[in-house]
Image (cartoon, rainbow, N blue to C red):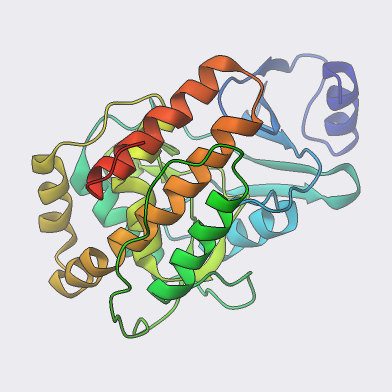
Length: 282
């Protein structure tokens, strides 16, 4: 959708006029995202690319809209303005503020607030280390030149006490600060284990793909201290190797299939970080 087409579409919905300013936003690897400044406020308009298959992060516009509805009032995500499936267009309130600045406690508190959302009805993701590792195996099997690595042992981990609405790709998709921190880009939500969300924030690979420096050990400990759930920390530590293996497989595969050299190099670095964590080399 061109700027002219988007302006016309939003005008018909009463969300923009001739005085509205449109600016295409950078970031993300897939969808087209615009900032729209109107006399009544600032909006984000996201036009979705075609659905993806065979990836850990499917592009699901209906699910993003539903996730934003479920999260309304929890101070977790942007407020939904409207969703038009036929146009593959989602509009939500713009979150004022800079990208997340390193405040670990604010992320821990946001994830605790998120637990109040109803997780029912979204796609499901594996909970058991065996199944998570199997997803990693399948991703490595797609590679033309996979690294010479072996999967981690399959730890015995009981199912979570409750399922959660999880984002699955937190990384650096965080805007604002303190109680105003918000988690954006909900196009691949799932019903799953909150530990998967914690991994997608704490993992060095996710930080690297977001063009940030991996978190330090001290920052990770600050997160857990603020989170105040030692039971989840223990569970996370048991699941961490399986998540690392799966995401390493994803990074290895993506580094081969993407065309842009800079992004491929970023995926290779992310792969190296996860293999290093597991005591292996790329």
